[in-house]
Length: 557
Picture 1 (cartoon, rainbow, N blue to C red):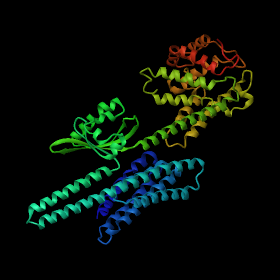
Picture 2 (spheres, one colour):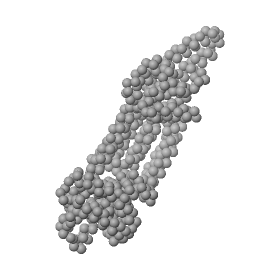
Picture 3 (cartoon, rainbow, N blue to C red):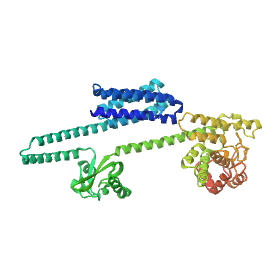
Picture 4 (cartoon, rainbow, N blue to C red):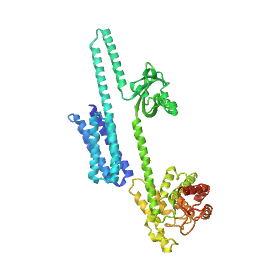
């Protein structure tokens, strides 16, 4: 009966929420909205059929089978949506994870049933994507492995939770049967009340012993504290974790086991405040330490209990040290991926520079100069809303791609030692268009814009002039993208202070004079003013990079 009732709850939740997620389809994949809506509605129709079948008395006992079919079918529908979006690289598989986590947390499943439900949905997802999109290439295989990791993690957690829930449910049923038996006995015996009472007292003592045994067999740490934070009772797991005997723990302030001063002062008041309003505390994370200094990461749940008219707080602390360790490893992996991506970006840009490279650390200098200017402009109220920390980080990544379009310029023009003819210069100017097209194409397959979109704007517009006499579009003033205006000055400063086959390097002072003279003509006056405020940083950065990558004759003093 319990499984039947919860199956109906799950099916009705799916009827409500499955079509509701069409809003997500409309926002992110409007081109597939009608197709996805049809899938969702067909699935909802099947769910209505299942719900009506369960109303038949003869079908109720098949509730587990119908629930299994509904989940597998739901996984198949979402898998079809991922096939339309490229297979394993689509993030829509998260919908299957939500179904697994939601249903398996509500249904009273055994561990084997939970594993069957979860692994079946995973198998449906993998087979559907492979049949729909073919054998994955290397990039898709990486996504498949990543998705599989999250699938199997969720299924494993759900199976463990089902084991705990099912064991608790069995204990509750046994307790109810025991209470019912006791009630029946009390009703049956009206004589010898005193003897019966004594017998019940003995049973209560035995029950108390069984409760204490259960209290100590719980896998989590359980602690009972008073309003002052003093430990009144605890189970064996708490004593094992802290390394102290029960007698030493009782009458001890629990805050002495917390690692951080902020936690020592804030967490107990936070718990008391929530429980005073009859709210529950769930998922609060703390760091504990024992007397030997060993640390332990825990997740806290708390409830308020009254014993003999006195308010106490029962704390259940679950050891999540292994989970936190995995989280830290994942963060380290993300940082490593980010560093690798930046190395690849810089290498790509360096590949374009190497064909006419007389500038040594040109890319490193451009990136440094760009960050200096962006940081300075961000202090202004006019630019602060645009130059956020994320924007400054992206412009630093994108700056090195400003001349990526030079890969499309013929060598006889790119490497010509003398001044270019008018026709050759027209060809050279096309490197802005080539670069913009390459970066825009690289960004077109992404579901959301990346730093490559900013790189495309920079590549196209970094030779535009404030007075509209630049190329390729002749944009005037503020119509030039802000990032391109910043990099325009950084690029010219580096060109002026670097040696070329057709000129020696200019000094900082000479370069500064030229930039000031071009304020309002070639350069945005606001960017020039930012340069003047930070010119010492430009000078120091130039000299520092010279020392890091010396190249004879490249700089003027």
